Image (cartoon, rainbow, N blue to C red; front, side, top):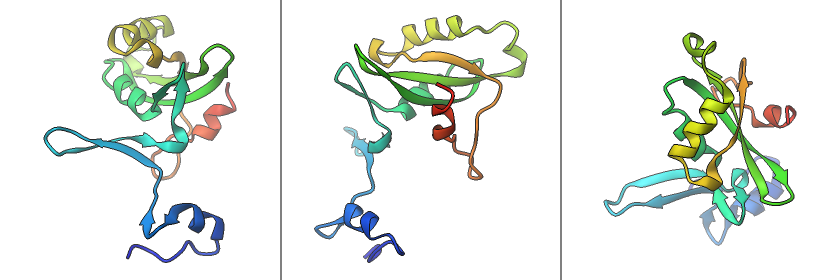
Length: 143
């Protein structure tokens, strides 16, 4: 047994503990070799033209860009596509003068499925929690 309930949170208990299972809201997959891959949290999943897009996946891809040292991806409503991913990115200090949002967007178009390509917003800093996670609620206020 993992837990019986959340302390003083009956709604969270009912939502998470069903039929003897703990429903975390995490989404993942098991590959052909039996490895488990974390894709993201159900509550953070975006729907772009009917396709499921996980911000964590876009953040991982952005982490491969040589000029990017950090990112946070959230969705914004869009009448045509449902939601649009928006990436707030931190550019490495040495590359700030030469790296433009358009350059990063072009890189994304070459390295991501078209529906995953985010709008790029270069940020001077990212709001972080004490545990080192991006505060996405704070990013949403910047939209």
